Image (cartoon, rainbow, N blue to C red; front, side):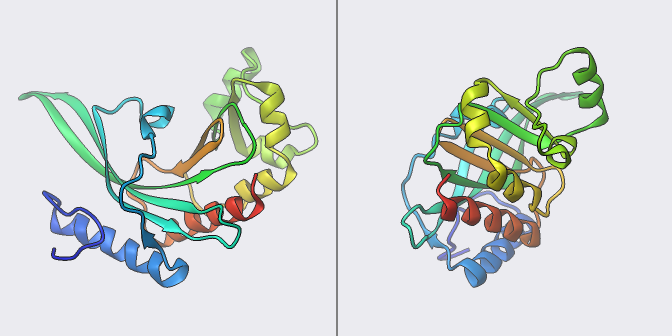
Amino acid sequence: MDNSPFDTIALTSDTIDWYNDTYTALKAKFGIQLTYDINFQLEQFEVFRGYVSINIRGSFVIKQDNNNDCYILFVETVSRVAGRQGIAEIPKYQVWALAYLKNDFGRVLIRRETLADKIIELVHPVELDFDEDKPFSDTFYVLINDREKATRAIDRNFRNAVMDVRMDNFMIEVVEHSLIIGDYDPVSPEKTIHMAEFITRICSHCW
């Protein structure tokens, strides 16, 4: 695909179409621009730990009036899977959004809470709950490594922004000042727009 805004080498036509539809939707609403060479240090995030390799197929910036820009990443992840023919390397194609924050969150992982999480919590209290925000705590599982930093950074406005994300199965991870949001499965252009709305809201408030 000539002059494509993302790397199309070895991609199937379906994947190219999916990425292209996503790019077109983002370009129309947010005016995304190419970032060219930026090292986003994705290896620092636990959400990518299980992969053999991570390759950014395309990276785009959403410019902000306050200069706290945010980014959309077209990501290829590769897993090793054992099968009858031996070990195979399986690529997956995802979209993630990234922001750089003013506050130090420590390490934080936020995802929708499952029944298994609730049962574990009864025996081993490992998550951060917010007594003053029961709807948020009932909806999301929040793992932290620094209670003081996380409690200060995950304020009411931040929690409201997370509650407003119109995506299922998304994950948010923060490593100190770097936040990423995404999903292990392919995300539709519509869901990617919701992700971009969240990340621009986060950047505009400069958390």
